[in-house]
Amino acid sequence: MNLREAGKLLGAIALCQLAGIIGAFATMPNIPTWYASLNKPFFNPPNWIFAPVWTILYALMGIALYFVWSNGLERKEVKDGVMLFGAQLALNASWSFLFFGMQSPLLGLICIVPLWMLIVLTIRKFYSVSKTSAYLMVPYLLWGTFATLLNLSIWLLN
Image 1 (cartoon, rainbow, N blue to C red):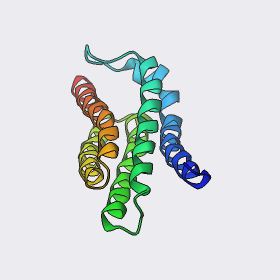
Image 2 (cartoon, rainbow, N blue to C red):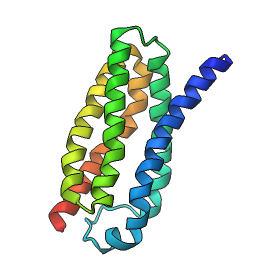
Image 3 (tube, rainbow, N blue to C red):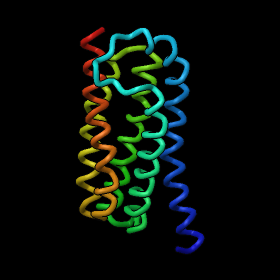
Image 4 (cartoon, rainbow, N blue to C red):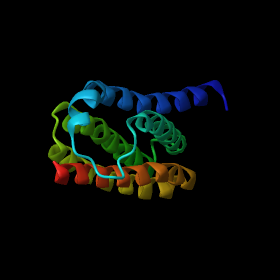
């Protein structure tokens, strides 16, 4: 891997991590206060698990983006995949502001359902460009599925 490719890889990972950092601004102040006061389902994981899981998921997402991007943005399927990826990443960051920042499990749910659908569409598009990229996105889809169920359960319990 040459220096330019290494820069693209690091940039793709940094972009995804940045989405997490942006979301953390809305999330972190509300965990010990508002979120702690909510009724949660029995399968709610401990709070400490979220940061390491998301850090790993954002890294995998960045690597997946890099592999697709490396196939050339001039290709329609690459451009479409990158656009879908960008849309889901924007919704990903938005969810934190809706759920935590606005303290609204309902708004979070309204956001996370289309986010989940965009993740599925992104994986399908990535698969046509780079099977490795699609597989790297599967843990994100699995966690997103869990997060959707958790968001729905919190909304129903509160």
